[in-house]
Length: 303
Image 1 (cartoon, rainbow, N blue to C red):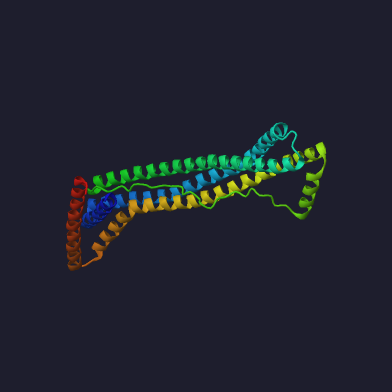
Image 2 (image 1 turned 30 degrees about the vertical axis):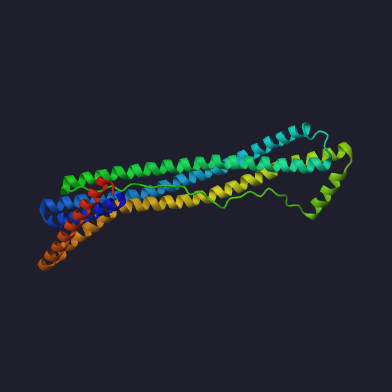
């Protein structure tokens, strides 16, 4: 109902502005219409500037994401390797090479996935906060500009104008997953078989060393997949934000521009055509006021 009220109010603004501007055809009145039109043009230019700001913030967030992936991937790889070493000195101290390989790999995979998922959530939060902040800043900027435009309409034309409400959301990706399995070629399969069959401490040492060498690469792979997912989501969210910014400016100024164009058409019309247009607009205004009254009464009664 609130959306319907907003649309009806915007349509009413368009009709009233058309009628008012059409009647201000000469002298000081015509100059005031020109001044108002110039202020409207400034808002349109600022709309293009807002898109540039949104793209710039997206680029900054992408750079921060890539830098974090490079720095944190190496750090997390070292941390997980240290956890693996502690496990080798604890639960797996006397385990066979085969047991170290099996349980060690399971533990390594779990640690790598958990670390990458935690990192992904942290970076996603940072991206969402960054986009939400720039979106709120742009929405506030638009509202301030439309407030000025509304004041200008009241000052120059004697009219009030509506201000649209912004919307924003960074959608969750449902297609992300981690691949924790081992992609082993024939050489690695043979080497692994030999490693598992080495006797005593030699076999255990070889199994431990292999897992420790594998840890940084596995963690880096998972961080890379998380970064790729976030890069995609950032790009999608940026496109959505740019569309939303453009739409907000269009919602805020589109009907005003349409009204001014219609008012200019009055000046080119014959007397009979202008009279017919005026009757049509008068009827539309009466109908819109009736609709708004019904909506307001329904809202007041909670229906």
